[in-house]
Length: 223
Image 1 (cartoon, rainbow, N blue to C red):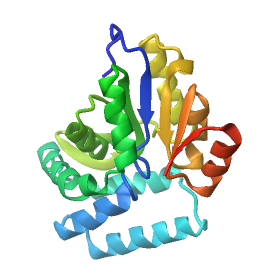
Image 2: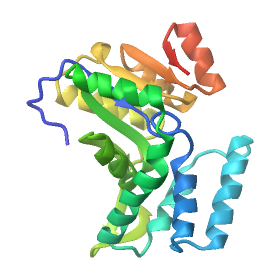
Image 3: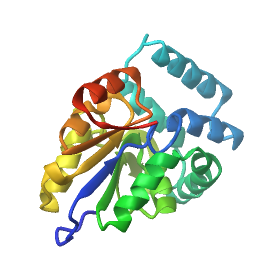
């Protein structure tokens, strides 16, 4: 995705859930797919219970939890997923765009900065939103495809926590951009490593843990 010959002065990295989008895309996706009769009611209820436990800090995000999210696409063809994700982006994600974060994204593009969306959300979801925003560079949780159909498994590491910071560092190296000149936008303390890896961290509607770090660090905060 990244062109080594790009002459961007800076890179602006954006998280997706809670940053560009208000809400959790995985839960929103399962609700959407249930309305399309793609997933069962049992799957929807199980997902809802997990997110309730997560909000109550009773469970943590694990590889298995993220892998379970990929199962919503199991058995669907690439064309079917592309069509569903395009509708999901238009009908569900676009109305939930965070005005301040999207304004910042457009401002960076106008200034000639490279914009990169890095998210632990499923890659087809990330791609669909980026297509609508005109963002060419993105990284999401890669979903395995065999013989033109999604298997329901993940393929490779998920950009979450430390891995998200590593992905951003890789972009900066390939584009020969100093991380001190880069920006990062995120809402959650799990993105601290990403935010700390750039010269211009921005907390977007931050959770309490991230807000504390932002205030201590004197970072810009978008409500």
